[in-house]
Structure formats: structure tokens, C-alpha cells
Image (cartoon, rainbow, N blue to C red; front, top):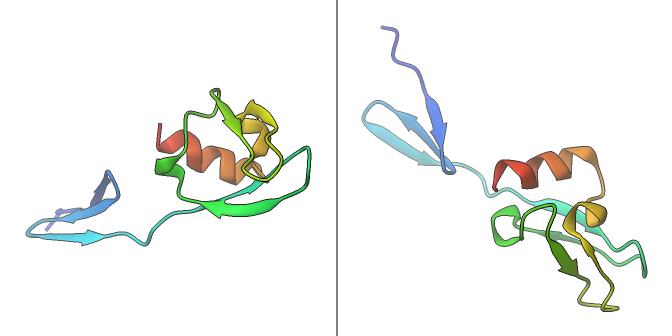
Length: 79
């Protein structure tokens, strides 16, 4: 008794078992052109780094593309 599940780098570690968590995604919205899409937070740069919209070419800090605070928090967890 007392064995607890923990998470580490996208895995849930249970004594003797490793279960891959459901893939995470964040919602982005370009502040210039309004394009909205979803992306894997682990494939994005840090939230303070520059990011360029693939639709219009606008470049801003990644944090400015996050739709919600929850999306921003998810990106921060993957940094």
C-alpha cells in the first residue's frame, strides 16, 4: 500500500506499469489574421520566444498566440 502513480515526461508511472498519456494539444489564434489551429505543445518554442503564423507571416511571442490561459499554462509545462 502507499504506492502512488506519478507523471513524468508524458508518462504515468505506476509501479511495474508505464501508460502513455493522451496527447496534449493547445489552441492558437493569430492576433493578426485570426487563423486558429491546434498544435502539440512539445513541438512549439518557449512561450517567450518568437513564433510566426504560417498563414500571414506575423511574428510575435508565442504567448500572444495562445487562445486561453490554460493553453499558455500547457505550453509552459512543456518548456
